[in-house]
Length: 304
Image (tube, rainbow, N blue to C red):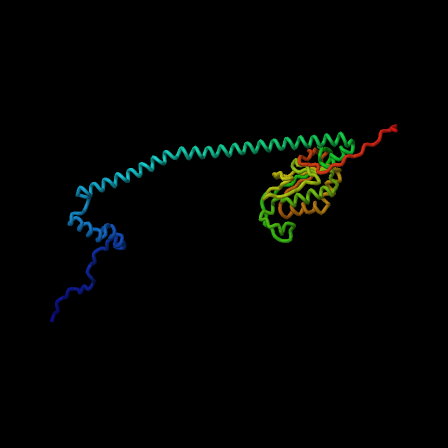
């Protein structure tokens, strides 16, 4: 028996409809299609059914709404007016305070100038008194005590902070300083430098124009170095009168000169020492006579 040809058995699944491009964003699609929550929609429909939706319809409710709006407008208006009225008053008070501070600063500057002038006048009178009553000894005393201006051969030592701070540790001379910026010149550094110059034979010393005496003090106020309570600004120019050929060599060979060399090598502190044919040192402005004794006059020759 001849069999008839059977149609091919196609068992492939039916063709599925294409997927939506936004199928992976079903939550976002739902939010976009239903922007208003169902609960809000039901509440709105209920108010519309009860006739309470929208603006108030009764006269009393309208009056209450109008009164509320008027009250809010009055509050905003009064606030704006008060701000405009108080602004010039505050500005005036601020300007008055600034003027008071400026006047106080000007007065303080004037008092400081008067003090400096009086100090200079007192110093001049002291120097004249020493010259008149002390003779040659008075002049020598004025030179040694710092009460008179001096000039002569000597050395000039310029000391400056390092270009960059260093945080080196170890057994350096500033190990226990407690300062993070070890590349800055400190008050104790200037003390050692000045003492080294005195020990090396200096007859008179000044730092940035401030004459040093037996009563001078080198202190620190924060990062600033004070000489007799006057702040100094780097670079520090130290002038010393003495034998220009030996003074510089003796200082460099001394312990304090070696200390300055270590500061240069270890912390980058810069210095330059040079011999000068003539240096000029001013008189000390803060020199105060604490005690004085009158000398007995010598009898004149030929007096009986």
